[in-house]
Image 1: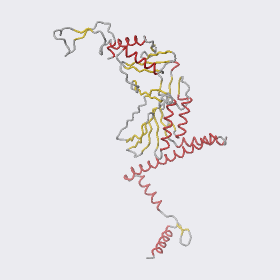
Image 2: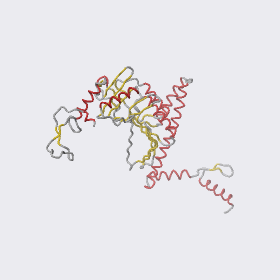
Image 3: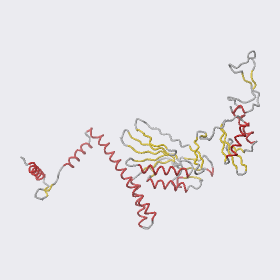
Image 4: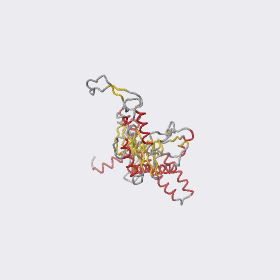
Length: 388
């Protein structure tokens, strides 16, 4: 219906609609005075009309985005965003917001849809306790091949999805957390806290965290002009320290995100990454902390880091041991029925483990000859059972 608000400057005629023709005047046509949906002129006519009306109420069009208007009156600031026939109003004064709605309804046929939840399929999130408002496209989509793996979604949060993944081929399993961090530092702190909570529940399964964290770990992951990101990096690093997660080595391009600007405003970042627990890296980190601690044994921070590094190494070692045990079981299951080398090695190992090489005789002497060991067993059980 928004297009009906646009005036038609050209001379355009339209046939009478089927079922709505005037009896006796079927040969006549309509001359359009307003734009209607389907006309090439409809969208420009509607936008021209809306622009004229909204400017008359002291709104100023944004130079870079002509669908965004701004109005400042004293301490009151209002934004109006137009998308086809939907208006999104943002105002820091409730009374002024109500006045704008009333004025718009006198200019156009409108319906108040209440507090906005989405705009252009982007979710609007609010935190009134912290007086924060933002946009997020953090819809996380998971897709997998059901012939290879089974996925059990455990918990769904705004910024992460926690699931249990079972490999149907290798019969191994792991915990996977898929992440899509929000745009502001404060909101991402909820994500870091959730990862710490998840870490405390991880027991034997390996844990992989991957996705878009919306921040960087180091300045080497930023190329171009950027604002102050030290706080965001500090929060991210603290999360990795608390959870014991380590960045998995990657291949290919490093900078996967660009702000679509040219010249000095161009900015590239590495926001996507995979995290997991790794024994060698955890041990290396513990060694480096202990070396620093030897030089400054009264440093409380180094003492805390050394304690945390020990816990990380212990947990990573347990996970690696569990993984190796699973691999050994899989290897045994694959090789046992094929009379392969692994089968005969396992049989030989079991026979060696079950063989007695030496024993203490009833007289207290240690005997190791095979015949003497056998004789001691016979004598012991003969005396025990009291028979031939």
